[in-house]
Image 1 (cartoon, rainbow, N blue to C red):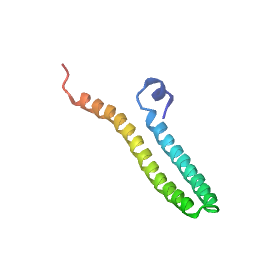
Image 2 (cartoon, one colour; image 1 turned 180 degrees about the vertical axis):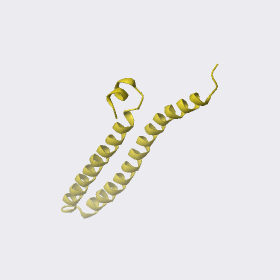
Image 3 (cartoon, helix red, strand yellow; image 1 turned 60 degrees about the horizontal axis):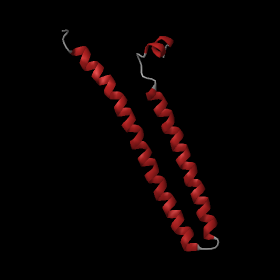
Image 4 (spheres, rainbow, N blue to C red; image 1 turned 60 degrees about the vertical axis):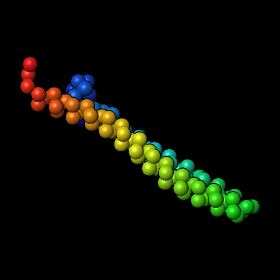
Length: 96
């Protein structure tokens, strides 16, 4: 990416930012899941069933969290790609 692209708004910068935020969000979700799993193991020391339930909920919640985060990031990328597609359509239309 050149500096003129940055100041001229010829290329969208948000796509790269969303991809970075996606990976950052995945790291945060995985860290929360590991923290929940560690907490569930600690809970198992005094209540095995509650700790096991917390363990399963942490795994399911982590999987759903990753899936939800992926869908949210893809929606933003689709919205940004609409701008590119509309630009291509406008360029193909005949001049008035």
